Amino acid sequence: MKDHWNRAYASKEINDLGWYEKIPSPSLQLISKCDIDTNSPILDVGAGASTFIDSLVKKGYKNITAADISEEALHKLKERLGKEKTSLIRWIIDDVTEPKHLQKLKNIAVWHDRALLHFLVESTQQNTYLSTLNKVIKHGGYVIIAAFSLSGATKCCGLKVNRYNQNTLKDFLGEDFELLEYFDYLYHTPSGNTRPYIYTLFQKNRG
Ligand SMILES: C[S@@+](CC[C@H](N)C(=O)[O-])C[C@H]1O[C@@H](n2cnc3c(N)ncnc32)[C@H](O)[C@@H]1O
Image 1 (cartoon, rainbow, N blue to C red):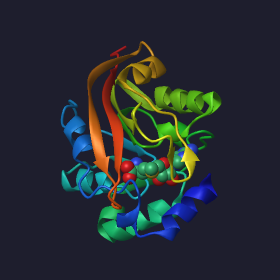
Image 2: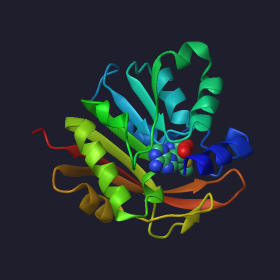
Image 3: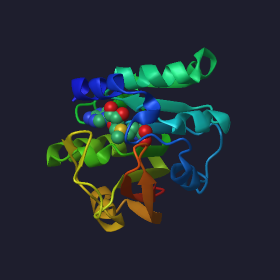
Image 4: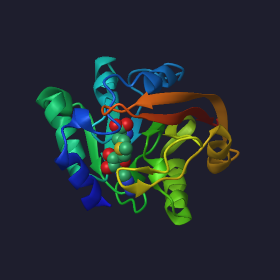
C-alpha cells in the first residue's frame, strides 16, 4: 500500500489528484462545530497533501499532527507549506492498519479522516483503525470522518473501497461515540467527475 500511494502522489501534480480540494470547506464546517481552542491537538490521519492542514495553520491551530502511509504525500505537503509552517506541524509516517507511531499519541481532541477509512476493506484493518482511534482520542474528543457514501464510487485510485452512511459509521465507532452532525456532500474531482461523500462529526463520551 505504501508503494501504491507513493506512486499515486509521484505520478501527478497535487492539484490534479482525484481527491484534491482547493478549500476543504466541509471539513472546516465540521471543525468549526467542535468546542476546541487553538492549542487543542488535532490529528489528520491519511492527511496526504491535503489543504486541510494549510487551513488549520492559517486559522492559528498550533498542535497539528499530519499522518500518512506515504512519505511522498507528506513531502509534497511540506513543499507547499514551506519551511516555517512545516516546522509548526508534527509529521508521522505510519500505516494505520499496522501502526507503530500513531499509537504513541494521546489526548487527541480532533481525529480527522477524509477518504482514508473507506480504503480499509478488511475487517482486521478496520478493527486496528478503530483501536488506534480509541487509544489516542481523549474523552469528549471529536471524530470527523468523511467517506464515500452508499451511492458513491466502488473504487478510487485503483483500489476497492467500502462505502458508508451515517448509520454504518455510527455502528462502526460504537456506543462510546455520539453522532452530532452529518451531511451528504458531492465532491467534484479536478477532471470533472463527481464523488458523493458522507461527512460525519462524532463526539466521544466524556468518561
Ligand atoms: C484519497 S487520499 C485522501 C488524502 C487527504 N485526506 C485528502 O483529503 O486530500 C487517501 C490518503 O490515505 C492515505 N492512506 C491510505 N492507506 C493508508 C494507511 N493504511 N495508513 C495511513 N494512510 C493511508 C494515502 O496515502 C492518501 O494520502
